[in-house]
Amino acid sequence: AQQSKSQTQLLADKAAGWLFYIALGVAALTALVWTIAVGFDVAVIARVATVLVIACPHALGLAVPLVVAITTALGAKNGVLVRDRLALEGARKVDTIIFDKTGTLTRGEFGVVGIQTAAGAYAEDEALALTAAIEGDSEHTIARGIRLAAEERNLEIPAERVRDFEAIKGRGVRARLDGAAAEGKEMYIGGPRMLEMLGIDLPPEIARFEAAAGEKGQSVVNLIEGSSDGAARVVAAFALADVIRPESYEAIDRLHEMNVEVAMLTGDAEEVAAAVAAELGIDTYFAEVLPEHKDQKVAELQRQGRTVAMVGDGVNDAPALTRADVGIAIGSGTDVAVESAGIILVKSNPLDVVNIVELSRASYRKMIENLIWATGYNVVALPLAAGVLAPWNIVLSPAVGALFMSLSTVIVAINAQLMRRQVSFAR
Image (tube, rainbow, N blue to C red):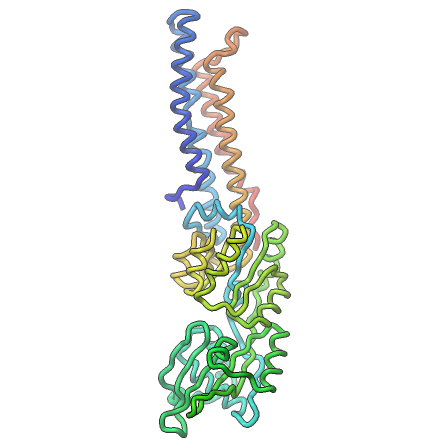
C-alpha cells in the first residue's frame, strides 16, 4: 500500500511540483518589484528569502502520505489489509457491493437437516453412507457436511466401492460405484444444474421435499443413479443448511444506511437464494450462477452505471474480484482470491466491508482537508511574504516565515492524526 499511489497522491505531487515553479516565479517577481521600488539592498534579499521559506512544500508534500500511513495502519490494526491504495480510495465511490454467499455472508459450514429417498430406492442411512463415500474426495463445503452427517450417525462408509471420481465444475460430482453389475453403476451428486445436464426430473416426493427445503432457505443436493441403458433417476435428496453469520445482518443494515446497495451471488438454487436474500434484506441476488459466469454478473451491474465492489473467498471468485472496481477477499479464502483483490479482510467478518467504506470516505476527507489547508496557506502566505501589505507596514521576516511554514506542517500532521478518533470500526 505504501508503494502504490492513489489519484489524490498524484494530484498532491503535481501541486508540489507546481508550487516549486510558482515559488521561483514569485521570488523573481518580488526581487524585481522591490529593486525597482527601493533599489537593491538587504530588504530585497529578506523579501526573497521569506518567499522561498514560506513556499517550502512540506505541508503539501505531507498532506496525503500522512493520511495514507495512518489509514493503512488503522486498517491493519483492525483486520483490513490494503494491498492497493487505489482500491481503498475507490471504495468511497462504491454504490453496489456484491457478496458471494457461501463462506462470506454465511459460515460455509453445512449440516444435513433432512433426507428424502425415492420410492423403492435406498433406505435413508444407506443413501447417506453411499453419498458420503462418493463425496470422499471432494473439498466442497456441502461434501464435508454430508460426510460429517454420516460420521455423526456412525455409518459404515463404503469408500472401497467408489472409483473414477470426477468433479463436474459448477454442477457436482460423478463416480462409479461397484455393485452387482461388473462394470459398476454411474452415480451423480448435484443440484439443479446436474439435473439440467442429465435431462431428468425429480420424483414427486423429492420435488415436494425440495420445495419445502427451499422455503426454509436450505440447499438440496440429489443422489442420482445411472442405469445400463444410459438413463438416470434421482434416488435420494439431502437438505443442508448453511448458517448465516450473525454479523451479516448488521453489515447489510449499515451499508443501506450509507446508501450502498447490496447484491448476492450464489450457485445455489433460486429458492435458497431468495430465502437468504429476504432474511438479510438484500436488494438483488443472482442464483444458480456457474463459477465461470460470476464475473459476468459484475460486468452486468457495471454496464448499468454502477461502481461495484466484489467480496469473495474462493478460486471461482478470482475473475469477479479482478473485474470489480474494488476487489475484497476474505482472508480465510484461497490464495488466488487474495492475490486477485486490492483489499483483504483478515477476520472474514462482513462488518469489515462497512469499515472499508467508512475508512475510504474518512481518508479521502482528510486528504482533501489537508490539500485545501496546504494550498490555501500558500495562497495567503506567499503574497504576504512578497510584501503586498508593505504600504501599511505589514511585512513578514524570514524568521516569521519559517515559523508559519513549520506551523502549516504541524497543522497538517495534527489533522491527519485526528482521523484516528473520527473512524470507529464496527465489530
